[in-house]
Image (cartoon, rainbow, N blue to C red; front, side):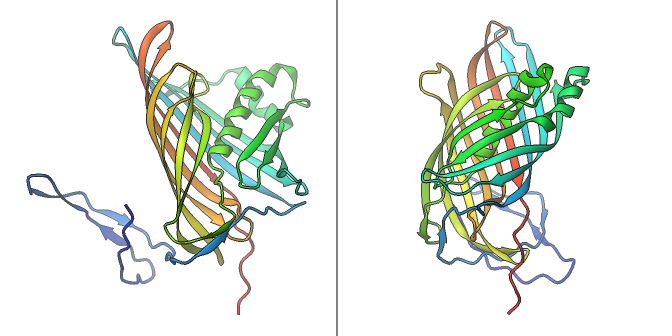
Length: 310
């Protein structure tokens, strides 16, 4: 549910204080903890055209953060947690539009990786340190459909030293899947505030050390227009259900939620933050187990040049 609440204008360095009041089924009222809410750009409810049209021949940088965690309880009652947290900076170079879509070349600039076991960092060995150095030799070719669906993506490891190729291939796949999860399919038409549309996404949820393929049935909601860095962009809500992919034989159920800010000029996602949580039954170390898996993904691209002053 979306609720628009008028708020007073804040002066410089002021914050909103928010304290929700909850009334339960018996009529009992409870006050929750107070939180602060910084001032955000106002949201204007107006119709806009949402269409993907990236700058042919141009390039831009992007920063991606992906945190995946698995909490596992096996049949003997033993509990353990595995995590894989990665940060990547990459450059996207756009080719000319093709009849079937928009090709782009992705090259890696920086990369960071932390593996955790039972919430404690695992010491990096020489293989991981070498992989973090060698990833600068990796690239990927991506093809975007006209509606911003990733039609094809393939890692290019030809320049990567042989000893690092297998590990970089796995991590590149995780990065490319994160980019796909955060790509927002656009209707290529004028949309009204609170108008919705649907799409499916397929990706792996987990840590890279252990992961499960899932399908997300997502509803996107156009919220309105915000001005950031002098440019108008569309705020889009993301909500969905997660389930196991047909034929994989894994019982999975969960939710996906997030928000994205999309350039009205190019249709590119300038920032997006999505969280996935799912419960599942699986086999781990040859034992039937239950698991709670989470995936949190964030991406940010540079803001376009500011609008000229009237």
